Image (cartoon, rainbow, N blue to C red; front, side, top):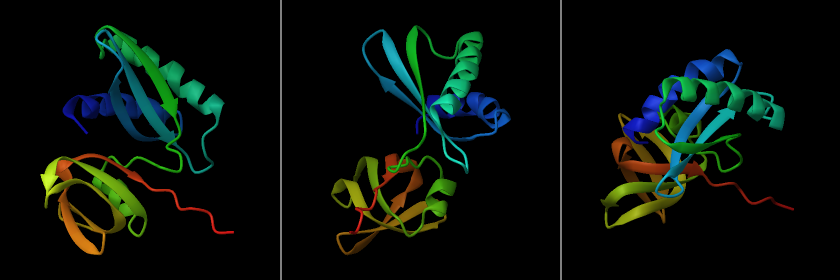
Amino acid sequence: MNLLDNDLQQLLAPVVTALGYELVGVERLMRGARTERLRVYIDSPSGISLSDCERVSYQASGVLDVQESIPGHYTLEVSSPGLDRPLFTLDHFRRFVGYKVKVRLTGPQDGRCHFTGMLQRVQDRNVIVVADGEEYSLPYEKINKAHLVPEEPHF
């Protein structure tokens, strides 16, 4: 997560929590030279409905516009984290120990940038993943993007 995403997360967290939701994370996605997309992930114990997303979108867009946090035009998307839930914080990684994850690093480690495997633990500021039969200690600061890998249903 880059610094600007962190600033946006800090700006939006009080708005989202005041409405009774968990702010899972914020992603800035570029669409073009003049427009960008801001994706806000929210969650609650009872799940997220379309009306939940609309409530958060209305309040969040007001705050973003007043604060002028994003220069130029942007599209705001509010969404549940879904089955392939993104992992933004070390607490997220701790919460999902034992789950299959996909992690992309900002640069290569051990000759690779992509790791898909079982999340074993968080040790200090390192995320420990077993991928392809080997254990990898991935520095949290080098993680560009991470998400859960949904399990295939067993019939």
